[in-house]
Length: 442
Image 1 (cartoon, rainbow, N blue to C red):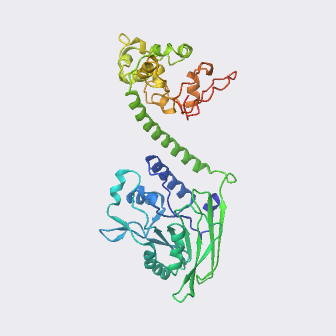
Image 2 (image 1 turned 90 degrees about the horizontal axis):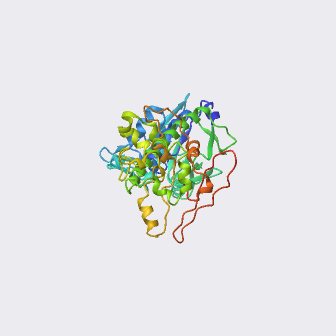
Image 3 (image 1 turned 180 degrees about the vertical axis):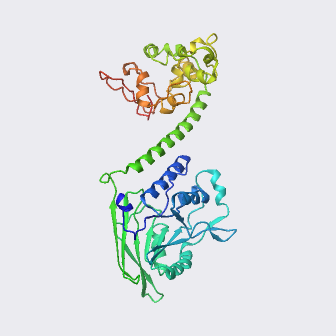
């Protein structure tokens, strides 16, 4: 990609849209940083795709101010003003050469049926007009203003070819939306009513997810007349080294996404902590004595002993240095609930009263409360003003308290449900991590 930022000055980098992926808060973060990376790479234009409509128009206009990338769509119309919400087109000038770029969205798309409810009101008074009719309106305007007319068509293959065959005056048509890739440029003929060819369109579709980069080279004479057009696709992959500046942006993005995921997971864990009653680690010892004994050798066992004075009454301290503080059946004080000292079994595996009752009633045991990174970052998050700041690494820190695999007994499973993979063999000289075949469970 570095080659593009050192390209000849007669050069435009553009995108056909759908930068947004799955209409979630996580993907809005990814979109934010993707736009910033595109700016670093030299992109100057992007068409709005239907997935991008999960974010409101004002968001895109703010990003245009921040990055300089212009976001285009000619046929998203504000019904109140009957005018386009985005810029319908732009004219790029290169020393006397002018290139007009128009963007269109399929009218088959609905305006923001996806994603975050708070953004949907932004689209209430908007509509998508017919892209062919919109092109017939704007292409003649561009034809008069520019030497070269480019249309970014977020329509899908069949509708893009239809557009190309019905609208005269388009030099280059770049398609998007459906993920289809055209490995070789296609020439679409524009026919008159009598069947004669009156124009032709150079049609390309470079695919999705930056798996390939499309490149179009247009040669013009000194009067701006097109002499030749050539299109190529270059597969992007391991052959191209990553850019350090882009890598640093991606690290910031991933850190922000991780914080969001932890926040969401913490909310779910809070619900599950509140859904049962804490019983204390001694209740677990009846069936898991070896694991209990190993727990007493870890820093979790002595967590409450690290508190003194006012800390033993500080809710922030007690929540992370005891078992179940603030929840039903959880730690209250050393005098009342000494059995809930330390970061006990239920701090990691969730409250277990119902689990114990099922076993005593000779009912089938169903495992719950698998450990995930968010389980640990409920407390290991550098929010405590008294604790030493650490760069928490889930694998490293989990290994410090992980029970040896020889103590692991696969739980019973309901009929027809997958069991757990057998524990790995113990390797000398290092801690072991137990992994189930059900995701991240430990």
